[in-house]
Each structure stands twice: as C-alpha cells, then as structure tokens.
Image (tube, rainbow, N blue to C red; front, top):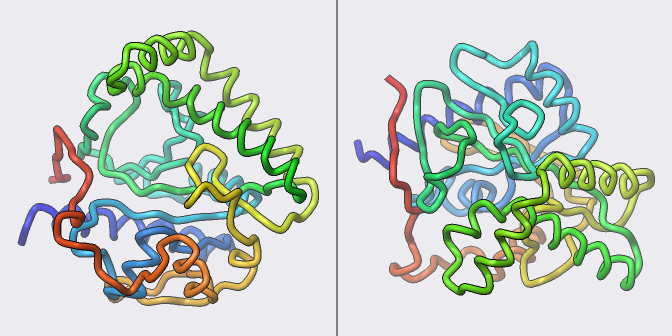
Length: 265
C-alpha cells in the first residue's frame, strides 16, 4: 500500500468520526470541493488527493464545535480552530489525528499544532445586492490576508509583498477573528441567496455559491461509507470545476507538498 493511500485511510477515519457525531447530534453537513468531486467521479478519494473537505452552515458548525467537546474521540482526534489553538490562523476548523504529523511545505515556521487533518469549512451568508457583495468580498479578502500574513512573510517572492505581510502580521489574530465573528453575526441574521467560506477564495472570483445547496442534502457513497452531500451536486461541481468529469492532464495530478508526514502508530 502506498504512503498516499495510507494517508487517505487516516483521513477517512476522521471523516467517519465527523459523520458519526453529526448523525448522533442531528447536525447537517456536506462533502464539498475535491471530496464531493471524488465521491461523484471516483467513488472516493481522487487518486492523487491528500486531503478532504466538509462544509457546514454557521449554525451547524457552532453546534458541531460544541458537540466535539463531549462527543469527539479525544484519544484519537483533536478539534482545532482559533478557539482551541492560540496559534491557529485559519478561519475554518480542522479535525487533527493525534500522534501523527502532516506539515505543509512553507508552513514549517508556524507554531500551531500539526497532524494529519480534515478541513471543516463554515459557510456564512453573503449579502444580497451587487454593491454589498463587492464590499463584502473586499473585506473578506483583507481578513484572509491578515490571517495569511505569517505564511506570506516566508513564501512571498517580492520584497514589497514581504514588507506588506510583515505590516499585516503586526495586527493580532485576536482582532482579526473578532472582526470575522462580527461579520458573520451581522450577515447571518437573515437568509441570503449566497454563502461562502469568508477566509477562503471563491472560484472564478464569484461572490459565493447558492445557499440552497446546503438546504437539500442526500447521501453519497465515499470509499464504501455513506456521507451527506448536496443533492444538486452537479450544479455545485459545475460551478466550481466546470466539466468536472474530465480528468486533468497528468502534470496537474499532484498532492500538496509536505516536508513531514508521520502516520499514527
């Protein structure tokens, strides 16, 4: 068995744990991104993929985060976001596998806890109206760059970019996350047409994707396991990937560079 396949099976174990908690607590979620694409096109992991993505609306995410305090198998797993790890700099959560390591290339200097992970993205409302959406996208871009600054200082190639990230890094993450929380609270008061992960880029520069995807779920088979998924996965995958059933050329079939990978014993 290849190392990549072993890594995928560890991630699958975390996916099953998330599904178990969500079904027990009545929490709605969906496979998203490459994981949903893999389920539809390959019946499981994209053969060269090294991660998995799950999405939840804000109310479900908050319930899931709270449920993890009592329901998560803490001997094996750790729920990570900015409320549980003071060095964490992303606007979404992760489930980490304890006694393992997956260190992304270019992030070796970061102090946050590492480990093989499963991303848990939170979908927040995007305001209706073209002008409001444009301002909202600009604000989300700024928040994303503030959080990315620790990585940008090391990985940016231009001197100007490095200098800008050094200035942004001075701003405490606690302030950025307070801004993120206030934005989510304000936008989630009423239902809107679109949702998105605020600190993650949207495909093709669009403002978000329809909230209706999260409101009509079904089951889908992934690696022989049953998970929740958007019923209208065809529309979602077409929005995100275009002609998603066409395989990318071989030179684009690669996984994320990592400097350290350690599987649990």
